Length: 247
Image 1: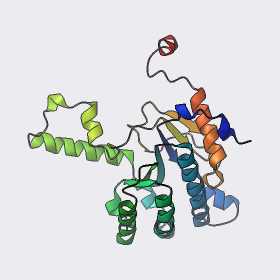
Image 2 (image 1 turned 180 degrees about the horizontal axis):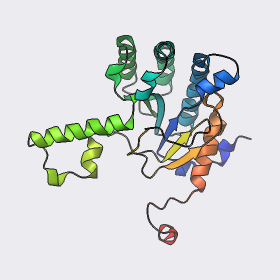
Image 3 (image 1 turned 90 degrees about the vertical axis):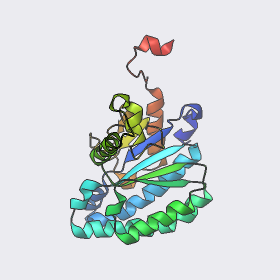
Image 4 (image 1 turned 135 degrees about the vertical axis):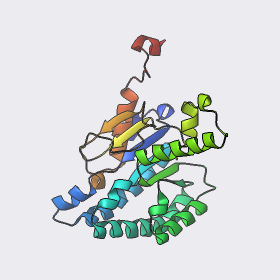
């Protein structure tokens, strides 16, 4: 019996964010090049998106490509961009069929023109979906996002559109690329690394963090269910005491 049946569907995290780590190491362990791992990681994306939609999850963010990843070998970056476009075009009909809406966050202007075109087509084709919101973080880093938000706020102050003394948490959140989404309640990182690698630094302030040794190409629905069950066993206090939370 799947552990899915033990999940309390009334207490699902509203938003799960995943750092999909370990594609390259998975491939190297099999004597293959890194792109082989990224290719097989696509199947994990498909499987996890399907599992999230089946559970009724509202938001799922996947860290697909960071701004730092541009510094990887040119062959790998080019291969990743081509794989991204191929995957998007192949998967859009499935997203539409399953009422999944695609979103993208990050410095997408840095992507090759052909990738930007494919992304925009996918965004347009899934814009009316009302089920799972699938957020792809592409050419994204949290420091880039925060600097960009601060620049926009500074410009607003300069143009007398924002009063400095009125700037608060809501102001900053409004200018983040995730302003339309709730903050993640659960962050999952695969492949045994214990860090968040410049991912949603502001938004993860009160998220529960879950780390697994499983490489991303091996991560499947059952692994997702285990992470959700672990989340449901935790006591979330948000700075309060345990007795306060239980009142």
